[in-house]
Image (tube, rainbow, N blue to C red; front, top):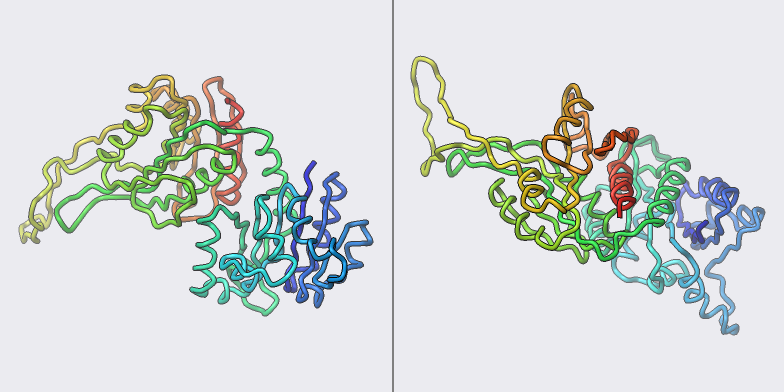
Amino acid sequence: MAKILIGISGSIAAYKIIGLAHALINKGHEVKVILTANALNFVTKASFTAFDIQVYTDELNYSDAKEVMQHIVLARWPDMILIAPSGANVIGKIANGIADNLLTSTIIASAAPIFIIPAMNKYMWSNWVVQENVKKLIENNINLWGPGFGLQACGDDGLGRMLEVDEILSKINQYIELKQHTLKGKKIVITLGATREAIDPVRFISNNSSGKMGYAITKAGVSLGAEIVLISGLVTMNKIAGVKIINVETADEMLKAAYEECINANIFIGCAAVCDYKIRNVSSQKIKKIDNVSNKIILELELVPDIIKSVKEKYPNIYAVGFAAETNNLLEYAKEKLIKKNLDLIIANDVSNGKVFSSDYSEAYILDKNNNCEHIKYSLKEHVAASIVNAIAKKF
């Protein structure tokens, strides 16, 4: 069971946290709550004290030394801190080190993992200032759960709605389960994103990979204490504190970097969407349109190296995890790849009809050499990634 500190900021969604706190207590967790001044406009202290939950506010007695140091006492107590709902104001304060109330002072003083659950209007969420602050939080290993899509209190419909209580509970349970394992002292090399193969100085062939799954796996690995090295193809992503990133473009460059980094690695996760082919003879000049009878141009292709298979052959003792992105015969093809490439684990994704690429959601199957198969239902990629890393951690 966990000690969970919930910080509630001013939002109409604050009332939902009453049910969340009650559910956590019923599951045996210890819960304490901090209400900001604005949160008190939506919920009362009695909403939580009725469940025998200790509630703290900014109304401190500064003549009492214990109350003056309340933020330090609270900062040392929890196993995890949830900020739910978290409006744009609180996100901005945390991102920029502003500690002007009990909640933000406690957060700055705490070494506990922090989970921010946003709730705001869709236009507020997409505002560039908010997104810059979110980027700061992510780069410093503060976790964001959500926001979700849906109808908002103002009547708008879009991204910004707070996750539902059952979703938050599921994430808390998963985090607690994940923390039962550790990857401390283990080095993980992860490839992610799309590779690009030139046709000429202007054109190239590539694919739709966003790198989101590899990024989510990285964050899950960091949370378990692993040393992570990312070999990144073409993606736009935030940096993660303490994670080494090697940027590459082609499959050959990715393989070279993988060979170098896997010398002393324990785990290799091939999450990148590598182009299967490259142009045999890349033109040094831009290819001009050619008017001919067929209106066609022929490009000769050749296979690129199979990165994960090559890494496993070079380093047979490394724990190799691959991905099978298929549009049909999902499990059948995944099992074939698992055997053919001598992998230890493979993640099977159905990518038909644009279900996965560039999406924040995914569904997957985790298969191992012993024909064990775990189904991860359609959910946020962070949830899928945590399940994958948890499955890996169990092997160590």
